[in-house]
Length: 530
Image 1 (cartoon, rainbow, N blue to C red):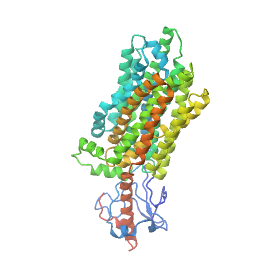
Image 2: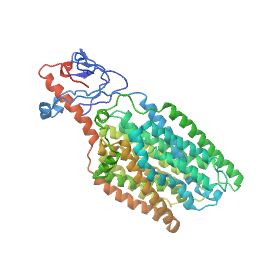
Image 3: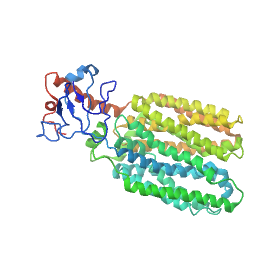
Image 4: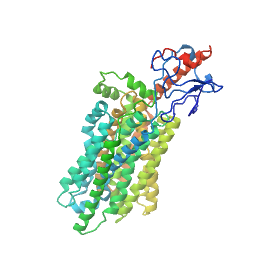
């Protein structure tokens, strides 16, 4: 029996590939004798394992493997993989950039009544300061996905951060009642930066993180965006009080704009200096195989067509759009919902929004860790979707009871599942579409969310204006029910997991079979070239 000398972890199947950063691992036999140090890099290097960093552990028994596989499979060499500690730096920097952009999305909507008074505009105009984020995404996501596939992750993140910074500085000069058109233009420039953000978490997680942490990394990437939304709910009502004096109000608005511009500038500089494209050595077998097998004649349009013909993925695209579109509508119209039942409670409206997002951040993280442990993508997604529907129903029927503490509780429960769903959709999509680009699949998910977000926000706003908040929320519940049914119809075809498991099982099977006839690990790999 063989063991890893460092960092061994067992899974239920006896195979696990989650090892720490930049450490070479030696094979040792059951007596602790060193047998080698990696796979050979050339045909002549047949007496040692070379510089190989990661490969599968053998379990305690070959009973965990299919004996027919052991007897019939040929050696399928594992490619070199490695985890870098700096992967966490890349994730942190991206999360900061996402946070800054998400804050600017909500800095108008959460104090919509104040900006309506300041600029002398109606509620629909204020809603469009949020909806422009959705509208910009739809025509621009195609070029950005092409850029991501052809120019790389770093270029996309740097360009997006630049748009975010430029838009923030444009808005600093718009704290004047006659400058609504210019503040809208600044918001539009920031919204272009969003197109460079929303599809990145799953791509970044796949490029930098190991098999047993990729879902958690994706969740953390989404957390950055949610944290920005949380700050967007909390800070504007504090920085911009509801005062009648226009000059005083202009001062507070200008202060908020300058703070957000300064933060966006610092983050842009950090991204430009620190953020890297991808690790020199891929973190997983799936990524290693994708790097080696992707043909030079790769066609972006062919990839889109394959995704559009993937029925389970298209069901996920629609169900994801319905869920996240409801979240966009709820976030944009939250101030109007709360003020209708609790006049003068702008600050508490922001705090309720903060509660929704903070609870959702916890839900996202928990769901990501759960997926890494269990790989139950469809089951988890379906359960979270059902609980989102239940939470929306409870929130809708308790909003008008006259007790703010009840709204805080129900909104928190709703947020835990509704925003906790975001990384689930990303990771489930990657599983259903492997080996297609993660940026392409997540881009289509987000495009669906933006379309439904525009439809739901405008429709619910009209319903609230005419019939009140309860019919508006019931409108969202109907579409969440449709999304729940569609999620239940998705066939769970986990292609990325199959790719990782196939590489591990084939190699372990061959090693086990050869060891039974007395061949040592280095001899098993003799004359194999990586």
